[in-house]
Image (tube, rainbow, N blue to C red; front, side):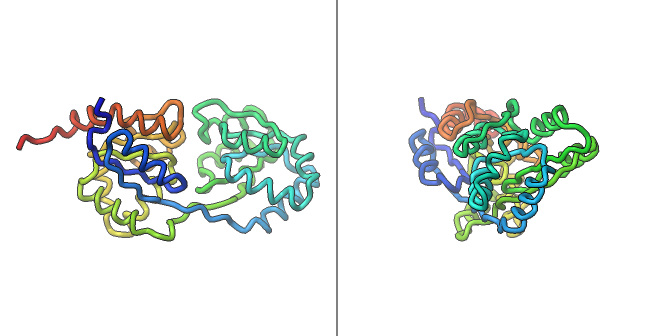
Length: 278
């Protein structure tokens, strides 16, 4: 099998950028890896002051953990203040948005209810609506982006008290030169495939394209590319930003994402934009 067969493949991966480039090359693609984000830990001092006060007063009924990294940061800082807070959390209704926050909770000796697939904020919302009663207080640990306003409106309309706790935000990487080159190549129609492993990647990519005055051209370029997503949460976020998803990895792992794209992208690309003879 020729796999990517020399297609030009863009990845916006940050944490595992070298590994992603190696995988693309392994499957006979030409990689362009442009880290699109960096995680910026927020000052949790004031946030933890308020959460600690509510927790000690018995005014927290549920906590929704939306990401593994954010869960570890939050619980580490909370336990550093007073390890007994973890014991208090054991008596609350804890909700995990998938396997990563669940695994992070286990490292602190905590268990939770994992919402069903596809592990998006919609499943978290549905679970809280089914589980909590009007007047009860749910804390949402945000990750990367703010909690979706539609989610907060639905929960508050049901009579729930909701507090959003931002743990970190995703910003542009310190070195934006690779991202600028990716914007230029996409706008010029020089790329064939886009691999996405988070919705925040595409948000930052489009935001940076807009800052360069290239948003329209980049959106046109994306419509000509085969776009592969690592899973439903990523696909949903991309769809909300107007980016069409052609392929989705299952199971939702980086290696499977690259393999799935390598197997199917050449045929999809050829059917949509056949190469011209000569």
